Length: 313
Image 1 (cartoon, rainbow, N blue to C red):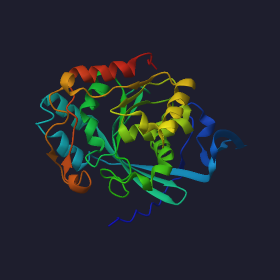
Image 2 (image 1 turned 180 degrees about the vertical axis):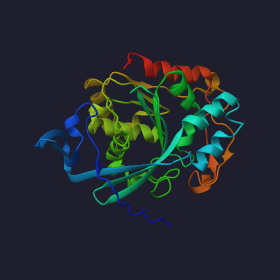
Image 3 (image 1 turned 30 degrees about the horizontal axis):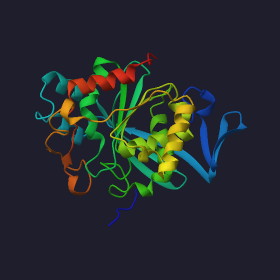
Image 4 (image 1 turned 90 degrees about the horizontal axis):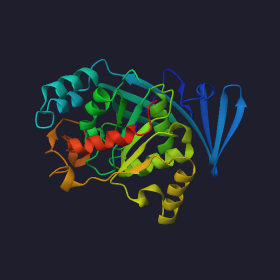
């Protein structure tokens, strides 16, 4: 049975913004849909409307940082089967923070579970999982320390709606697919980011990002976008639509799009570590199981090199 969505009541009205480099877009963003054309229409000194497809979208959020790391994250990081190094374990426990981001798009409420590390730089990487029932923010956790400690990236890991500890029906993206781009922008806005962000995404997460890029390109322009284990069909509702989206990205200045698939032969003998028991970390048959990709040092370095190429700011 579908669990009812929580009634999100926001104490502070923080409005999602469409352009991290444009201060005037930060007070309020109201999103209007008109077919597939994005048009910026100023409606006041610090207010803008965005026109897409016949549908008005009003996006607000509030971030609730936890005082301590979540029990689920702490249990996962203490798995010696995955985090064998004392140095890595201590660093994760000291530097990773947990938060819940309340988002409201018109009358649709979402609670997004997130874990993150902030560095002194404004170089952000948003990491998104795929749509399999085993997926959640945990899958890419072996990238946290390399990205942040070694290369000074700020990293944001989230459970998309219907996955992990976020709200929504179990592993069913149809209930939030229409609002996917606005959810992503609200997540990024909640961290008060002032420059475009890099992306590391898998399968369904990649599809969500491609739709977001097409609506809000300023958030990703001139950054590196890595899609793993993604096929062209992930980028549109049909094969023809997929190629159109892909070509649109390439032609509109997103030349840093990279497809980097897993190669179990070269990368590792096994794609994932054995399941870790963590209470209430997932959904369905994986409600108490955490899945983590088993990444080789070679593969980790390939990801980092791709993210860093021509991306010094």
